Image 1 (cartoon, rainbow over the protein chains, first blue to last red):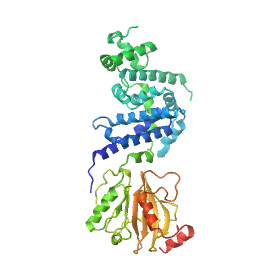
Image 2: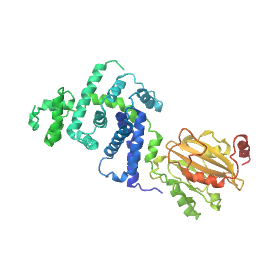
Image 3: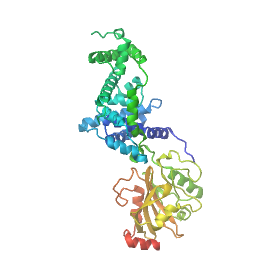
Image 4: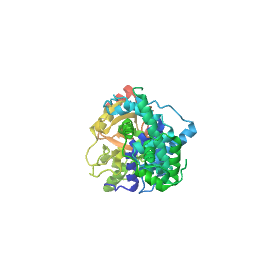
Length: 173
Length: 270
């Protein structure tokens, strides 16, 4: 009675496994979990509709992240969407869902998120892929459709800005 | 400043470019443009990339809660394969016993034709996910489906049978490992049998079903279907239930919806 897994099933499972990473990626892009989940939802729907456009052998995660980024960019264009980045409490709630109190004792964690949230959108893309997803410059360039030097320079500026925000902030926020 | 060719930048400048420690904005732009124009310079620069830095580490820690947070069910549901396992298995069980086929609908649900003789030997078995009774595993069954299996013996999960026996409409019932159940509608069909539409919310999916009381005192399943999306906060009585189940209820309902004391009384003499 065991049904053999077909490619479609395998891809679906791979997509499901990617959802947490997709949420994190979208969270960095959008600044709030609520917006992130909207983007994730739209991205997954697009991915399912266009599953045949993903080429086996290429990275499914890159493909999905690219869809998510384009979705977010389109969203922002359509809605002139620039909500604040104020979900730090929300994130803590999220993390606490498993019943384990997540103590964000050091507000370093909050400070870092706030600092990332303050970066320009085009730097957050790169931060999400290179710092969080540990994509290589080349992989990030491919996923974002950017030249590699641009990926490097955006990350460079992001690193500089983060370093500045984090050292300057000290105990603030 | 000249930016022609990779030789004009020193390794120290390129390393600083990567590290984010280059203060000179014009130089930063120049290096970016040069790398974009010159694959060899891109290679040279990448070779200078230092390992993991503190910032990347801190950023990963900061967003780790999102990775470990439970994924909302409605997101997983988008990707989950339409669950067909129960149809596959019932079909196999039926053909093994020469039972007539129920009418399948396109929404992934099914319903039995009215009161065929086959219903008598087909008892309600409900499993979530897990192996089917035949011992196989549900292919692609990560959707946590409400899986109904035809079996020889009475395997109605006691929790489901108990809910159908006694729970009033609208009351959430803990079905232990099966999830949470709720009867959404109780009525009598044209033959006078008591029927109950119910739903089961498992970890990753909501299923609807309609069962009617059989002559043997057990519950026989008349229709079953999975919801396309998870149940929202606001639930109308079966309003967003699976199409196959709604259709079966529409066909069979021959009384007012029984609620409150009337429902409790009817349940006692089902």
